[in-house]
Image (tube, rainbow, N blue to C red; front, side, top):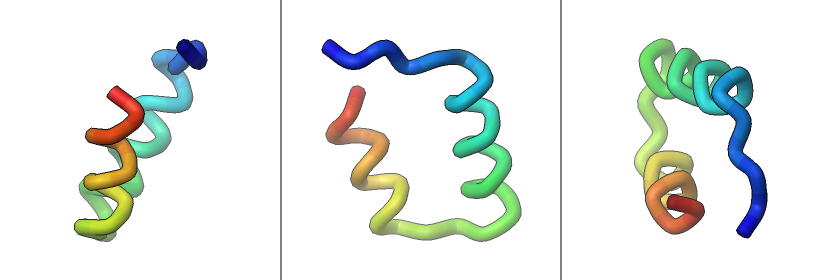
Length: 32
């Protein structure tokens, strides 16, 4: 399993909040 750092997660969460993107959200769900 790949390490998923908290910093990276926060960056992605910020992007999602600013600019919702269904494809990106699905990618993240797959990674989890």
